[in-house]
Image 1 (cartoon, helix red, strand yellow):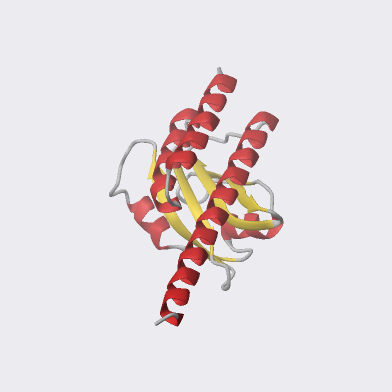
Image 2: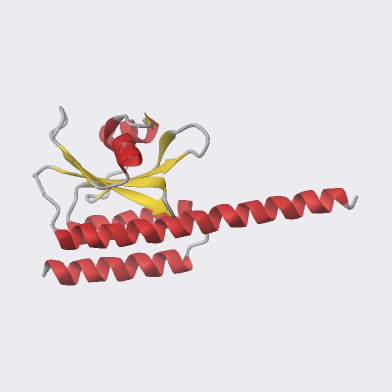
Amino acid sequence: TNETRRLAAQYQVTSILAEADNLTEAAPQVLDVLLQNMEWDYGTIWRAERFTDELKCIEIRSRSGAVDDPFLTACRKKIHKMGEGLPGRVLVEKTHLIGQAEEDGLHRLGFPIIHGDRVVGVLKFYHTEILPPDENLIRMMTSIGSQLGLFIEKEQLEQQFRQSQKLEAIGRL
C-alpha cells in the first residue's frame, strides 16, 4: 500500500541520515529511496546559499538510474534565485508547492527543507503524470524536510567547530 511504502521510505531516510557524515554522501541515497518508494521520475535537492539568496542543485537523481540524461545535466547547472522557479518560490513561501508541466512535459512538486524558521533547501520531484499530494504525503515530506534541515544544520555546526579549532591552533603558534 501507499502507506507502507511511505513508512518504509521515511525509515530508510532516517537510517541514511544517521549513518552519513555529510549531505554530499546522504543526498543520492535519500533521493534514490524517495524516487523508488514514491515512484517519481526525477528528484533534486537544492541547497540555499546563506548569503546570496540562491538555491544550487547539489544532487539530482533519476528513478531509471540514467546519469547522462540532458535533463539531469541542465538541472545540475541551474541556479534559482529567491522567488524564481518552483524551488525559489518554495524558499520564499516556506511550504510545499505544485508546478504544472513545462515544455519538458514534467509536473513538479517541491517541499521545503526547514531548520527552525529558515528554509535551508528544497526537495523537488518530477513526474510525467499529475500526482497531487495527499495529506499523508505532505506530512511525510514535511517530516523528511525537517530531518534534512537538522542534518544540514548539524553539518554546518561541525564545519564551524573544525574551523574554530584550526584558528585556535594557529593562535597558539
